[in-house]
Image 1 (tube, rainbow, N blue to C red):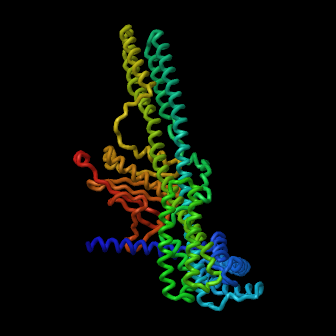
Image 2: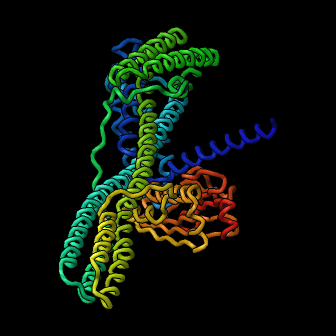
Image 3: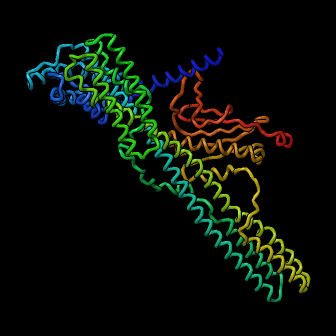
Amino acid sequence: MGGRRADQHGALMLRAGRVWRALGATFLSGRYFTRWSLVLAIAVGVLLSVPSVGDASFEGYLRGVTVAALGSLPLIVIGFIGTWAERSLDRPAARAAAVIGTIVAIAGIRPFVNDAVSTLLFATSTGTNWASRIVTNLITCLAVFTVCALTITYQRQLHATTARLQLAAAQMRAGIAEVCRLQNEATRTRHRLVDDLRAARDQLLSRPLDFEAVRGYADRVRAASHALNGLRTAPAPDSLHAVRVGPTERMPFLGRLGTTPPLTVGLTYLAATLPFALTHGGLSVVLTAVVVNAALDLAAWALIRSTRRLRPRLRGSLFFATWLAVGVAVMGLTFALIPDVGSLGLVPLAGVPLIAVIISLCVDVYRRAHAEEQRATTVLLGSARRLAAEVDASQAPLDRATDLLHGRLQGRCVILAAHVDENVPEPEVIETFRAQTDDILDDVRSDDIDGEDEPEDIDDLVRAWSVVMGVSLAINADARDALTRAALGDAVSSLVNEGLVNAVKHSGARWAEIEIGRRGDRLHVRVASPGILAVVGPADNGRVTGIGTRGDGTTVRQQGDRVILEGAFAIPTANVATS
């Protein structure tokens, strides 16, 4: 029990560490402020975090919206200055200082700007509770900018990853189409050469035979064998880089509104209004608001979750109607707990649905981008295997035809040439040669290949990947013998395939090196490609799992500017005994 608790605690700390690193990376990235985060901040400031101007009426709320909108103009200027400073600075610490300074400046001067605008337009002050208003603005700015920055950063990363995967998969599909075309051409060429050889043989046997005539036919067979051996059955490396990925299907806005994580909407609204609630209502009001908002949030979550099977537009409409109803309930709660709240009591009517929409869109971006990445990964894995299989299926008839022509048919020609060089051929000899060569030529022309349960050929897989990236393969002789076992060969091919997918997925690598060797009774596979792992911690000696790794014997590590995927596989006993 203690060990399980320790594991759970360790997993929790690891997850917390990753969240903290993600937040820190966002502040230091140089892309914390974007046009979308500034637009979102303005929308929240104008509709949610509005100043109190006049009485608790819709007219008072509209006055607050007007004041907030006009007061946003100097704040926008500060935001643009902060964005420019963040982009211009190279040092991460300086970027973080620019980000924090911009947020503090916006949150600090906003109450005074709004008060000045309200006094100028409506001759009404917005109040003097400066400290709680500044803290409220600070919490709201941090939440809005950080959530937006995290969402956009993650979406961009996943979009870039998905684009690389989709391009590689498109190249694989184009490669499959090219292999089919080459296979059809090779089949037509093979059939034509068989017909030519059969006609030449008939012409040979229709005349008196001598050694030179038979040797001439044998030379023709050898030329046909070489012609088949020279046919291409796979796309040339780097020949499909001009392939383009088609447009993706767009989801309507209402269809992107779905279930939010439980309690996130209610707690986010409470966090933004907590300083004001403590100042005007006290701890009892805050505790009551927490309980009621949590209950409303969970009720809305359960109701919206039950609409998942509905059509996207209808589901989105019900989402908006549900959170609007929650906003009405929170507005009623606000007036009940703080009767003299003024026009600020109307804020939940627009604020709660707005927060729900923002959180839902952020979650939707994450879920859709992650799902698309997983789908693209699966498609690429399957496409690589299919291309390798198509190449193998295209090459097999040519290899068999070459062997038959170079071995059996030329062998019959040698036997006949030796016979006619010393004797006048009897009719039985000629007919035997005709029957044997007919059988051989029929086999060469046939498209049926006896299918045996053979392991996936690592060479075919590498040849398939050559349409996407440069791949070098080095296999020790003793290791290649072990790869003839179906289970082991398939396991090694799966690891190599996954390593090459990760090379494209995580860094857009254009080359990779594969090494397969043997140490004792284990086969060791190493796939190296340029790139930087997303998470590398000193606590685990620079090794991480979970990026395409499958078992205990598989690891991913950073080595300089390369990502190394390594796997070890036990060699079956039968192979150990015979090697």
